[in-house]
Length: 131
Image (cartoon, rainbow, N blue to C red; front, side, top):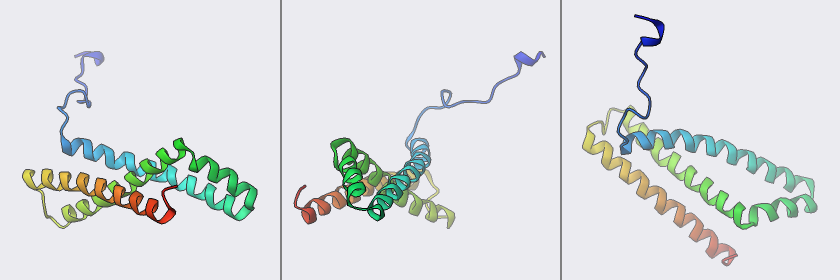
């Protein structure tokens, strides 16, 4: 058998997509988004420590519509990663491995992510007066 005739490892295109696969990939992606959001948080804290001019400049960027969309995505990633991490803790304890429980907990993670994200943003809008 020639070197070029060797079978290749299956790639993502070979498998049929399902909820558990997508949630595994999203868990990794949300971790990356959280790391990027931490960089933005550090920039905001540095601007806060640097004085009013820097703080106003950074707050203007974060308070813009694209900045708010990114903050919303970051908070959704935070809640998703938290809820999915709790699900993984149950798996580490040997609970919820059967397929129906795995799918049920997956849907519960998605619902909890949506509820927690909307509750956090709703609460922030109430406290800040809708601005």
